[in-house]
Length: 452
Ligand SMILES: Nc1ncnc2c1ncn2[C@@H]1O[C@H](COP(=O)(O)OP(=O)(O)OP(=O)(O)O)[C@@H](O)[C@H]1O
Ligand SMILES: [Mg+2]
Image 1 (cartoon, rainbow, N blue to C red):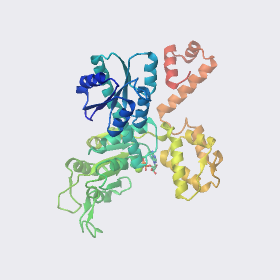
Image 2: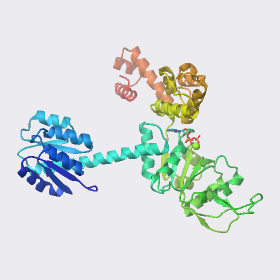
Image 3: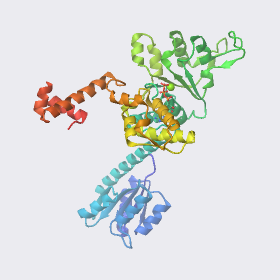
Image 4: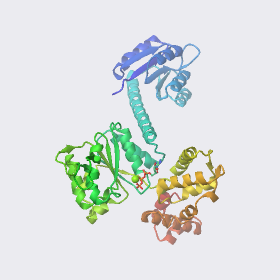
């Protein structure tokens, strides 16, 4: 047990209190007891207790069940076990309804109680861990302004939480506009390097001739136009994070140089003699399929492995449509306030179209569409008519645009099965026969596509 575990025993019989306290001694770091609900409340407020074991019948105006409700209102993570002399199902059910974890019956069997308490300790530990994880996730989103509630994004947030405090090299993959840079910044903000600099360099936007000096810096007079010494990205990012965007755009020759620096951490400024060292944490990103480029021979395999220690995959927006309404809301209020407009809402039909669109440009495209709407729509309600025409068409022809081949095939398969089911009055054997598959395969596919 890592965290201290404290138990509060509430029973009006001193013998039970002391007997339990003695019997559970080894399972807790501290045990206190109280003879009534009010005394228990006082003790609870004065200390911290992870587990409360309370008799249902207590002297005074509050019984054990009420006590449990009150304690769990104060501290929702409190685990409670009730003791009942009567062992009636009703009491047990009522106790569980009020949030008790378990119940025990008098006369108390110490061995049994020890087992139950051990389970309660474990339950409490898991619950605390879960909550801590949720808090960390919420914090990850908060720190970096990442909006989204879908499982895939939560996984990404969880992953970056876990690696933020390490120096591990992260490679972020995702289509254009999915939020790769946002995630890279989040990794920096959540890490213990957050007081250092986040230096972003776009390798796709740099001419080959400038690349080396941009990454490693140059000395005064190193080349024509180098009128003064300039530190490169690796130097600027010391104690911070270096974000290498569009990593696959780096020319073959520079791939070797980059690999060498990543391995040795040492480099020279262009024209310099001094061997410099950078501890920058490397996060890189690409919207391309690197394994494919490695197979083609256009990207070095050793560099890929060096960069891809922790791979993070951001799914395209069309694969997390549940997040679209959240993002719409977020960008609406963001741009209304930025452009000094009164708050606007998107009506139901418009929201449906936005949610169904294929968004080849992902979150960036959505963001731009909403900004344009905020600026151009005078009414406080945005309707389907206000939406750019390309959205409606991308939505209705989504089978043709923005889908991967697998997604397109699956969409077609689902549609075909649906149509065959309808044509055969949902008779499964006939449908299977019409489709030329076994009934088992049909069942499997129906389950998979949620067709019932
Ligand atoms: N989950 C999100 N919540 C809020 N804003 C987001 C989210 N994802 C992306 N954005 C916003 O969308 C825009 C594009 O994100 P970003 O620049 O990080 O994408 P990218 O993957 O780096 O794109 P590219 O491949 O084109 O460089 C930014 O304005 C970013 O703030
Ligand atoms: Mg980017």
